[in-house]
Length: 191
Image (cartoon, rainbow, N blue to C red; front, side, top):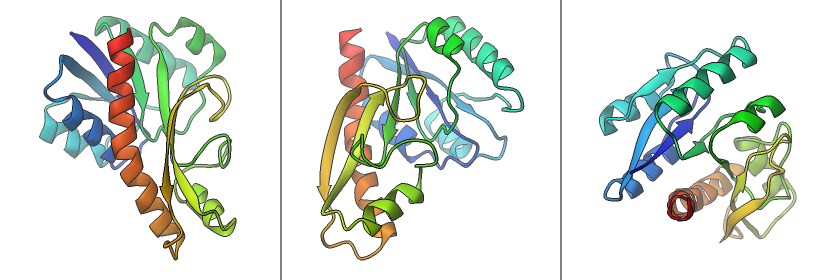
């Protein structure tokens, strides 16, 4: 059985985690754990509802965080890491030593609207301000730069009817919830 880990930030609501967990529920895959960086992260409740352990790793020191994460990945024999709202860059040393691929979902069509500071509503505000007719989501490998890893999959969504950045965000999130679980499953089948 393949195992994945999901890594989130302290404020993650957990909607992408939940989409992945529900999609993989009847497949030979286990979500070994979800990493949270705050003991009050809303995702912890979703983890409990779905029976997935939530591990708290404080972010005070990135080196300590990465060392603890590497130990957990090896201890649980994780095959793939899915980032879901994790906003920090991993160090080159972690990326070199990580025993499995790391993937991320970005709420826009990379390479546009990516990079440092482009997360959450900021992305959708930029897409909306630019007058884009489509947006979407991108799953990509994680490397040393924000949103610059090789693109694995993308899906567009028409946003011409959207009248606010929040509507763009809702449209993109629906795409994320379909694209990310399918992409994670496809990658696991190749490992």
